[in-house]
Length: 145
Picture 1 (cartoon, rainbow, N blue to C red):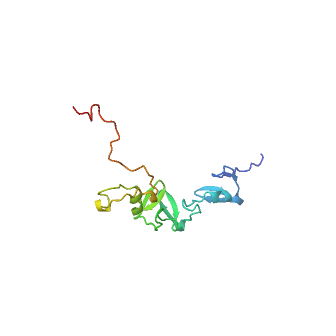
Picture 2: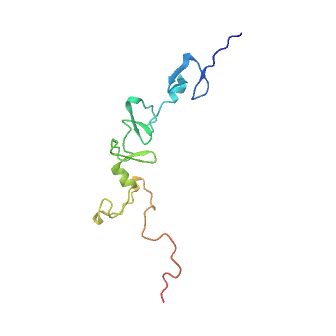
């Protein structure tokens, strides 16, 4: 009976055989050394590897402690001061200024109103709400006898 070489494990990253001299075991699987480097979690802000000792989980991703700051004012964030929008991190104050409601009764009074459209915060001109209806007038409206 001929000797049969046992089949080597497959690397989950490249699907090639992994032999003992080049294997890196992780999460119950065997990776090539080069494939495992590519499988390391990267920070969405700086794209550098995030190691367990320095990770801050937020918004479904893992961040460096030094990258975990507001996208507008650059303040360092904590779990209690964090707001997320489309994968970006903001402090609650900047989030409210950029994405919150505008006008009377929302954080200021009539004395605080201004013509600021928020363009310096990335809001686009023309996205302001108006007091004009966005539907056609009913038939006969506006006719005087």
